[in-house]
Length: 57
Image (cartoon, rainbow, N blue to C red; front, side, top):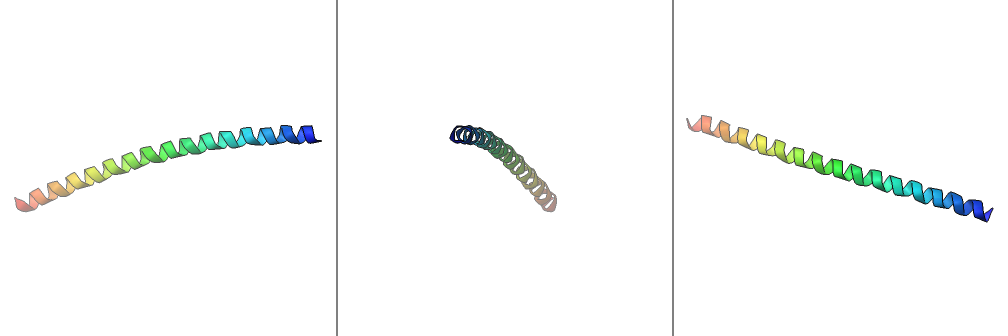
């Protein structure tokens, strides 16, 4: 029983390792989302600049 328990525990460790890999991939995805969001902020900033130029003109 202890041998099978150790095998089950090692499988759980392998599963948790893959979960950690999935979590790191999610972190990488959220990082790209943050990059996309910052690009959207830059786009909205340029839109505000264009709007302010239109107001000046």
